Length: 326
Image 1 (cartoon, one colour):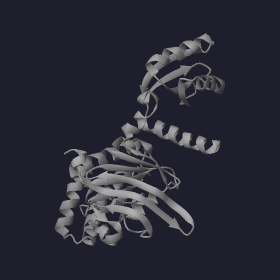
Image 2 (cartoon, helix red, strand yellow):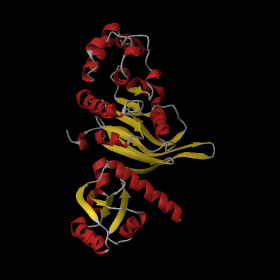
Image 3 (cartoon, rainbow, N blue to C red):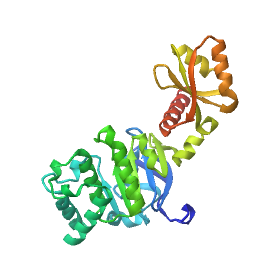
């Protein structure tokens, strides 16, 4: 099914929210189709959590149109809670550590009116998708590894078979080596169970599994699109030159930045830079030749694709510079 044929399960149009005289959310608009993964991204204070609280009917005093799980938030109120799932940032907030994983499933299932049998069947199905070892299902949660606790927490968020699953910083508290495992499990869940997911995060690597991302800053949307489309907006459609320069200095970086065909220069190592050039095919050789002519030793040159992390970094720096120039 093409995206155009799917239904918008989340739709936010001209959302504004104020606390007293403080304007918290300003003209927020975005949407998400059924079965997609949407990332709400930005640094602390950007407005991510506040948007989620509006979507789940915790902050009713907003203006604008807000649809969540296919329901009008203004009209439906807390009825929406029956159609969503939530995974908190800290597993300790939704796990009973002295009970087993299956006992946790039974407890949370009962909150949604599931029988013991129904809850256990649903829990086992999700545990299998998440590849939680079967020999741990009857072990106390406190004895599980950090990654296993995180996956049980995710399973509890899905126990009521929600139409939308909200995840708050799902990679927080997980070893760096396990972060990608968690993201891969979320993508696997999304593909096999078809649950729409909204991930609230400052972890930019999460963009790798997102169909769309909302970039937020100070309660406003900076960008809303697919990660690939955002990267494509960079010079040369996101293709970059990586240069290794012996004795790299700020003066050399400034020399490169001042060239009219260079848009951005990012230092990414002691002697390494990423250069974002207009028309990279014609200008990369020109850049290297000019550097060599100025006795700047370029020891290697490679071409590659910009990451979403780099896009975010450049975008936020550009906004800050524009703000300072005003």
